[in-house]
Image (cartoon, rainbow, N blue to C red; front, side, top):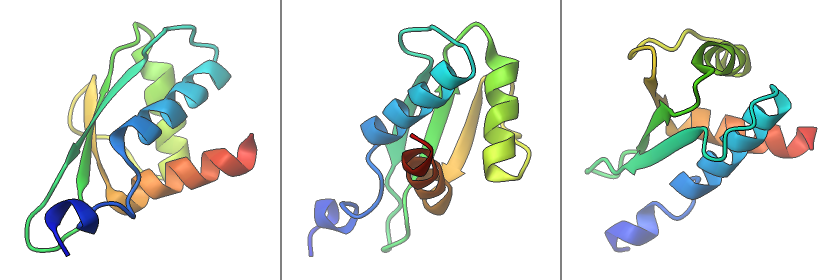
Length: 99
């Protein structure tokens, strides 16, 4: 299995960004691109990490909504945070069931 195949069963960065945009719209944010998401591949067969940057001017309501969904505090800063692969899956799968 090559390195790109190892990450195909995890949410892609674009999928997570699109899901986060739906969450932003649900929260009343009309920003065209409220989040930037980068998938960080981790060597050794470990699941990837996701770096999420809030680009919207209304950051705090979006942070609070995501903290509720994840049931944890987001701590890397006021505009960015990291997600584990299972948290990204939780957001993508949980959002699908709500729409």
